[in-house]
Amino acid sequence: MRQIQMVDLKSQYEKIQNEIDTAVLDVIRSTQYINGSEVKKFQEDLENYLGVKHVIPCGNGTDALQVAMMALDLKPGDEVITTSFTFVATVEVIALLGLTPVLVDVLPDTFNIDPESVRKAITPNTKAIVPVHLFGQCVDMEPLMELAKEHNLHIIEDNAQAIGADYIFEDGRRQKAGTMGIVGCTSFFPSKNLGCYGDGGAVFTNDDELAKKLRVIVNHGMEVRYYHDSVGVNSRLDSIQAAILRIKLQHLDEYAAARNKAASYYDMAFANHPRITTPVRSDFSTHVFHQYTLVIENLDQFALQKYMGEKEIPAMIYYPVPMHMQKAYQDPRYKEGDFPVTEKLSKTVISLPMHTELDDEQLKHITDSLLEYLK
Ligand SMILES: *Cc1c(COP(=O)(O)O)cnc(C)c1O
Image (cartoon, rainbow, N blue to C red; front, side, top):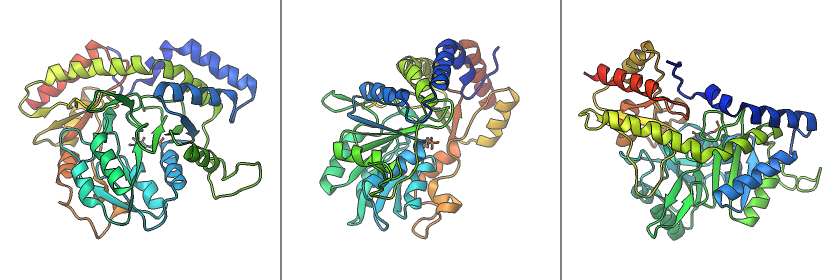
């Protein structure tokens, strides 16, 4: 059996090695390392794929969130509502910009932000909502978009984990994750569904004015060279990464299908187990399985992780500590017990290997081992 990886980037690369190697060498020989034609072409390819007017590439997913909030002119004191169950970057940039993060609980089935809790958290200072499409499945956007409209709030989608997923509206219309809010943010970190071979990220919007502002902000607040009209940052996608992403984007839907195939294998193996809850498939979203995450009742996650490790199976706990329990984000407004769903999930979730290269032999070893442990 091939060694099992949490994400098997090597086997994936080997299948497209010739194309990738040629594209990377072409960039090196072109010497257009920054803002080269590959970046522009990737931007256009991604705009077409997502059906969005503007893609603004940047340095990474965390920068994407930061520049989005800067472009929307959010100011210290403004409240930004987001989820307590996410990767730290979402909350980090809110804090970094001196904005006030307002955390809300998630739904137990999708792990995604609860629109009802968002409604209750809105105050006169609320300026934006940051839904995170966690683990590869869309937040239920329609109620959230109605709320945003009603209260005149910006929606900034954190789409680092769900690129390629479709949100399905009540009327059957479909839209790509990350293109429904005023702005969407993504990451091309190697292990993400559309990952490059280093750091990368992008911001999406259909708003022409905002796109213009975003392009200025990622480039030192500069529209005309050496004239700086606003304070910006330096956040770029480099040409080598763009060339790699152009190739991988062509495979993104096929990669999502491969992930879904592995997910179905897991689903079948764990169906009807009294202690295991397999990931829900919402009728309002497709799933691109950035992670395959189980909830297991009465579990010592770390003991299970150790046992799986002994069987040479990586398993991860995303995320063991809710945002309101993190040392850096302690806040007198929040205490243990405030977000019971998040808190329970943080103690009962475990993510299994999930990538495009899992074969049946590996999947059988993973599912057999886990079921054996729970006997
Ligand atoms: C990965 C991730 C980010 C940050 O992306 P980077 O490219 O690593 O900066 C932000 N939000 C979520 C939910 C993520 O998973």
